[in-house]
Length: 541
DNA sequence: CGTGCGTACAAAT
DNA sequence: TGTACGCACG
Image (cartoon, rainbow, N blue to C red; front, side, top):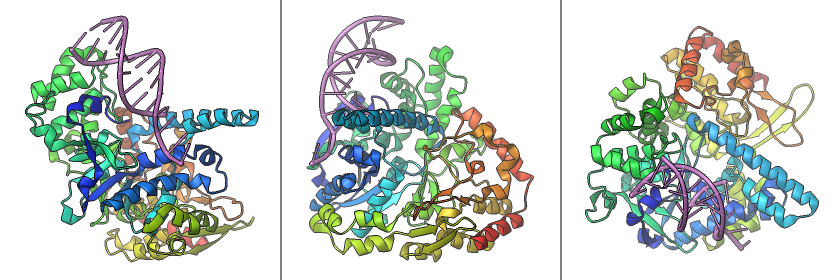
């Protein structure tokens, strides 16, 4: 994770600090790192999905830290990860497989009666799931703690907030474990914070202005710095063999220009350099510079920094490597924690689950800072979807809530007029409808390409099984409501919706596939047809 | 000299 | 799992 060896290389600029220096300020939190750490304490219970309070220990851990920040009069802003970027798909898949083997082995140990051995393996198998994030969100809501679910990388969202002015609800620092934050250009990152608020801080301005320390970044700016990070190897692109952080630094500081550094690299390591490295390099840098983030005040997705015209031309206007575009209404639903950003389904919150996170537990978890009756709040905020299964047609009862009411009356939505109705319905029936349909409608009207991201790492992608004709067949896009047990809501997204572009590993392949899709789309189905299909679907349900 | 690999250890109560 | 440190190779 992150930039290889970056923190070690930056050691002279890493300074011990205490979080209380940010008293009275807003500080961003990379939720994933605390969720992950918290999950260790209850890894077995999480893996086995056992009943009881132990499973919720990670919430305790998280809120403990939140309360510590509040103790120092810091305003926490919690940022969650959203969907995965296409170029990360392959790595995520492998990780998931490894975790699965660990879990299976742990189960074996448990059957043997070796509990200690099992726990060790469960700890390796533990994953932070969207559902865990969602449970945490319920508590954050009840505690009036600000949060936002990023459309894609939380790091990019945190960088965006970091570069906002304070009076525009920006943050002054980020608490994280991930060195990527620096590559994204976060002015202040607080690493390795412990339970008491001690940690290690890197302030980018100090890095760029310091004249005494080695290595010197005196002649760097954020763009050169990001370029160095990508050269050294990052999550989006492995480095050229033999190039690590030190060589990357030398190249960039010597030529002070990424193009020249790149051509010198090609000159020296041309034989070991992949054919499409230069293109991939540009794209990786562009992810750090122009990632898609959610603008809370505009209630829509935008770029971290606007994309310059030249870059757009260089990329052939193909921006899918930043992750598919997301319509404002969906982006807002994601950002507010109402829709799982990986599956685009509504979160399953059952009364039983809410109970777990509530009453006594909330009191315990939130301590003296609890401001309201958490239980009532939690149940109010959670959408409760119940489907009673029957063999002929499934009935669905929906309890709407404040959150969805807000979305329905959101003044910022700018989907084309004729789709407003569908959008409202989408928000009401969140689990069973996806915005690809909306996207298609808008696309044919405004000639824009819009897709629903589908990067659920938990789902096996079988791209080769998808018939080309299925891709744009609207009936295929209508989600099926499958047979369910008791109150469980399971809404599957059909195979055809699973993204083709998340499969390819390299950018060339990625581009080719998306181009093909574009062509296919352009010659089928009128938007009117699609809209009717959607509305028919709603009336059926 | 730096990369890249192996080994050791900690993470949370 | 991931991270930090030490050593050997190019």
